[in-house]
Image (cartoon, rainbow, N blue to C red):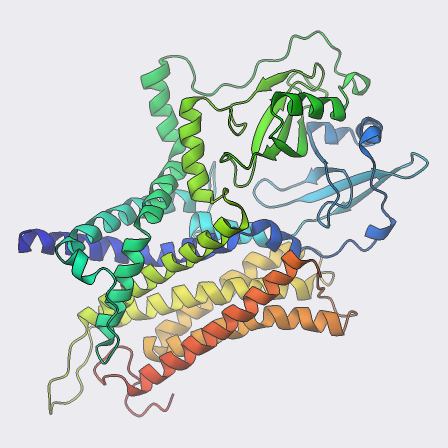
Length: 537
C-alpha cells in the first residue's frame, strides 16, 4: 500500500480517536459496570426495614390484590407492575410509581395483602445509583435533556468518529498485520510496548467495537432513521402508531380483568420456553388497556437490556403483540433485536456478561492508551548534552485532559457509590447526591490535572481512584461491624460480588499508581510524563 495513503489514514485514525477517545472512555467504563446493573441496583438499595413483616401474596390472590390497590390508589391504574417471584429487590408482588421518575427512579408504592385480606401499602424511593452509571454510559457524562438526553446525540456523533477511527486504524495496520499482530515488546522503549498493546486489544476486539459503534449511532439517531425508513418503505403510513382503543365491548372495571394466572397460562401455552418475570399493566381502566409480560428465552436474544415482551389484552386474555417476544419477531425486528442483543450482551448468561465487562474495560484501555501514544509521539525529544526541552502547550494540555477525564470518571463513580450509602437516611433525597458527588469529583479531577500537570496528576488521581474504590468494600465491612451506622451490607452472593470486585479493582489501581510513579521518577527527562525538575513527587 502506498505510503501517502497510509499517512492519510493514520492522520484520520489519530484525530478521530483523539476527539472521541475521552468521551468513549467514560461510555465504555460505565458500560462495563452496567453489565451487572441489577446487582448494582440491589447493592445500592437499602434493606427493607420491615421486610420480615411483609407477607408475599400468592398467585391465587393477585386479582384481589390488584382490585384493592386500584380502589385505594386510583392513580396506580396508569401503570403498575406485578412481580412474579419474591426476591430481595421485590419483597411484595405489586409496585407502582407514585411521582417523578421520567429518567431516574421516582417515589414508588408497594402493596401486599395481610393474612386477613387487609391491604398493606408503603412508599419508598429506589436507588438511582445504577441509573446514574447507565446514563454515563449513554451520554458520556454530557448533561442536558429534551426529548432525549443531549449527551446521547453527542455520543452518536462521537461514535461516527469512533467507527472512522476503527476502520482507518485497521488500514494503517494492514501492511504489518501478520508480523505485529500478537507482538508485545517490553523493554526500554515504552512507547513501542504501549503501541503493541493498543494494537493487540484493538484488532482482537474489532468486531465487538464495530457492533458497539454502529448500534450507538442507531440508538442516538433512531428517530431520524425510523422517519426515513417510514417514508421509503411505508409511504404515508406511520412506521409506528399508537394502538387504537380496544372495541372488545368489555366495561373497563377491575372485576372484569382476566386473572394474572390465566394470562400467564396463555403465554406458556403459546411458547413453553418463554420464562415470564413480571407483568406490567398500562392504562388498565382506560380504552387502551394492555399488559406486557416481560421475560426471557435462553435460546434467543431479547430486545431490551435483559428481557423481551409479549403484549396481551387484560380484559380478553388475547395475545395482541409478539413483535418483541424472543423467537417470534418478524425478520426485520429480528435483525434489530440481534443488534440490540449484541450491544447489551444479554445472551449467554453470566459468562457472556463477564466477557462484555472485560471487553468494555479493554475498550476503555484502548482509548486511554491511544491518547497516551499521541502525547508521546508529539513530545519534543531532548538532544544529548542539551538543556531540557520545553514541551508544546497542546501536548501538555492533551495529557492533562486525558488523565483528568479518565481517572476522574473512575474516582467519581466510586465516590458516588460510597457517599450514597453514607447519606442514606440522613438526607431527604439521597438520590440527588449521586450525580452531585460524581460531577464534583470528576470536575475537580480535571481541574487538578490541569493545575498540577499530567505527570504529577496521573499518580495522584490513580491513588484517588484506588482509594475511592477501596472505600466500597471498606464501607461494607464497617456496616457489618457497626450496624448502627447508615451504610448497610447485603449478604446475597450477587451483592457481595460487588464488594469483592471493587476490592480487586482497588488493588489493581494501586499497583498502576505505583508503577506510574516509578515511570514518572525514572523515565526520560524530556517526557511529558516526567516529574518537573526539583519535584520530589
